[in-house]
Structure formats: structure tokens, C-alpha cells
Length: 254
Image 1 (spheres, rainbow, N blue to C red):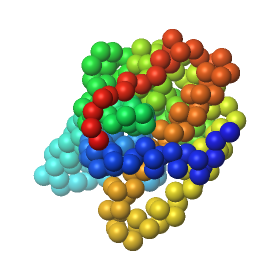
Image 2 (cartoon, rainbow, N blue to C red):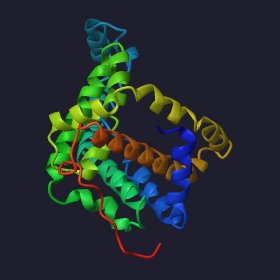
Image 3 (spheres, rainbow, N blue to C red):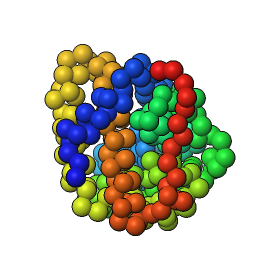
């Protein structure tokens, strides 16, 4: 039975001599948007406060030069939205899987920086598909009165790690196995996340800069959590070593 203290102690041990490499990995993930998985769908409900008739009247009442400008701004905003979605689906989300692979390999031996980008090799498109469909389901859940989204977020929290270990998993299998692994663990994972709140408050004093230095520790801890869930799945017969074959070890210097 794992405890928060046990996972954190293992994470600190895994980071010994490897912290700065892990720091650069998490920094690149943050800069490229791979620090979080899933698809973020944000809607401004205030824009729906006026009726379509009122909006049309306001548009036609604009000066002649203002209407083309508004159309240009709306077109630019739409293009940015589309490009942002494509960036998230094809780069940020797969990088999240690469980050999971890096920290899982780093638990056993120093992992090279390039492990972060190993996800872009075959079967890259399968990783994209599984991550996209999982994130889409979670996002739809958040639109359904919030609660289903929160529930599914924790149910499928292990999907990126499962793909990091076996990128050939189907969407159905990855989501099913994650849900089975997280049975009885969702509240405990929330408590583990909450245990970092003191560190997050301290990072606020640095205007958020401290988060860049904290992230290697949190990611190493969540890698330890997956290791515990993986052991649970194998012990309970939820998966086999053929399906979860472990992570590569590298004979390199820290």
C-alpha cells in the first residue's frame, strides 16, 4: 500500500543526480504546451447574453469601416483557434506522453533528453488518436455540469503513462485499463495532488517562476504513482507483462 510520503521519497531518490536534466525536460514541455494533457474547451458565456437579433443589429449599426475590421479580427481569432487546436493535438498532447516515458525510464536509470521526443516515432498517429479521443471525452464531461469531467479526468489519468509504456494500445483498451487501475484510487490521487499545495503557495511568492523548479519533483512523484498502479494492475491480473512490458533502461552517465 503506497503513501504520499513513500512516493515523494522515491521521487527524490530518482531525481538524485538527474534533477537538472529533468528540469530542462519539464521546461521544454511547459514551453511547448505539453505540461498538461487533454483538450481545453473554454467558452465565454457572456457572449451569449445577447440574442442573435441584437447581435445582428449591433453589427449593421457599425460604421462602414468598422465592420470589415471586426470580420478581419474574427477571422484571425478563428485561425488562431484552429492552429492552437492542431498544435495541442499533434504536438503538445503527444509530448505529454513523451514526458511520462522520460520520467518512467529515469526511475531506473538516467534517461537521455531525446526520450521526450521518442513519441514522434511509430506509432505516433495512434498516440495522437488515443490522446485526442480521451481528451475529447473528458472535455465533453466538463460541459455536462462539470462533475462527469472531473470523474473522467481521474478515471483516465493513467492513459498517457500507458501509452508511454505501450504506444500500440487502442483507445478502448487504454481507457478501460486506466479506469480499472484507478478504481479506489481517485480520491487518493487527489490527496496526492493536494499534498503539493504548500509548494504551490511558495511558488506564488516568486511570481510563478518557482513552478519551473518544482515541476520535476511533481512529475517524478506522479511517475511513482503510475509505478504503484502498474504493480497493482499486474498483481490483480488486469494486464500482463506482454501488454505492459516495462520501460527501457539506458547505460548512460547522469
